[in-house]
Image (cartoon, rainbow, N blue to C red; front, side):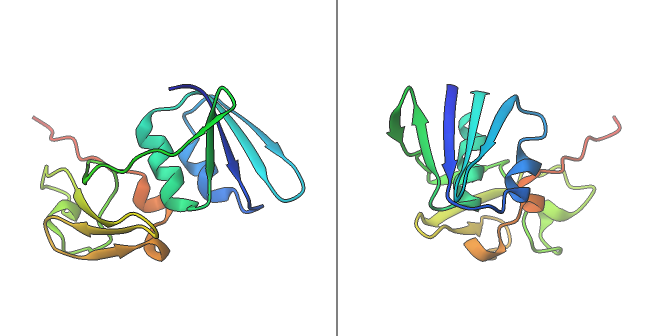
Length: 135
């Protein structure tokens, strides 16, 4: 999507800044809200923002919309379970989560079965670390 504006009703924007590191974004702080304008906004980035900020509002050309969660999020974030097969450094398995509940978000790892509530979702989990095999 192009020219998406995200409105967050918070002053704590450090988590979203980590997600926007490689994005072209304009950030405006006002009294009780933060407006982020993205020139290019892949759906994956919008869903990550929605996982971190449940009350985020999204606008395209002044019309509000809400990104839809698919039933399964694949290659989207890391599993918080250190013993999960997707967390092992030499296992080239793409993390996969089933969306159990959309509001508030509750995800379940398809491999180890660990539930990930909204409180456990951090920018570090949403920054997917991929292992590239040496061959």
